[in-house]
Amino acid sequence: MRTVFASLVASIALLPSVAGQQSPARTLVAVYAHPDDESSASPLLAKYAREGVKVHLIIATDGAAGGQNTSIPRGPELARARAEEARCATDALGAAPPILLDFPDGQLGNYAEDPLRLFKLTQRVHEELQRLRPDALITWGPDGGTGHPDHRLVSAVVTQLVRTGAPGVPERLFYASLPEAAMKVASPRGVPPMLIPDAKHLTTRVPFTQPDLESAKRSLSCHKTQFPPEAIAKVAESAKAVWNGVVPVSPAFASAGKDDLFR
Image (cartoon, rainbow, N blue to C red; front, side, top):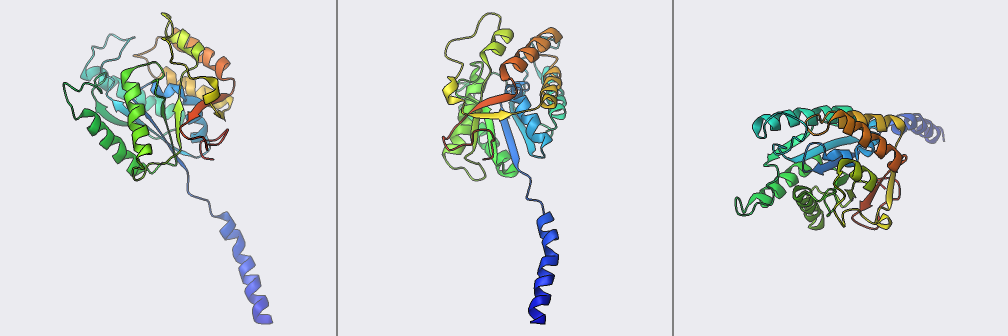
């Protein structure tokens, strides 16, 4: 009897150390085409980073064909500047440094120039996902947010990896989009047709806090080659009103949770 009692006491004594063990940190990977694309879900990324989730950003292109707000010529010099902006943005969000794949900007679908390019991109994205072992993924929807071909192709590549059950790639895939009001601010010429997802498909709604929104604004402010300060202020203000504390995303599969990418 004493032996049984002593064993029970010893077992109870071990409980605090077992209870104190923390489960492995979850990992969220955002896969996008260009530096600045993460702004479509930046408060969500900031929220999860703040909560201890390992947040990574994979950027497919070098961004060398962008630069709407800079005198830096398009090409390698602009690519270097945008790489620094991407690092600034991930720092602001609390995420890991960006993973830059350096494919040619605006040319992901140029089959005539390189018929293997999309296959190479698929392989590189898969290699990074195998290394990172994410629990959830987020990327552009099939609309590409703004309709950009690079955005659409990155979405297709990530979706392909999920649908084929590629090793190391989770089924928890979510599509980000831009609110129509924010699109109107960013595109004074008007929003192209059939880009804004129907609200009925935005069934996962992830709440965020004011500090997360501030992190998102700092992140957007890093992209100085893309947006003048007044545009950043307008987009940030519009996003605050439209999101209203929640980033809505479309789950690739209906079984996804209602307010969390990991449930």
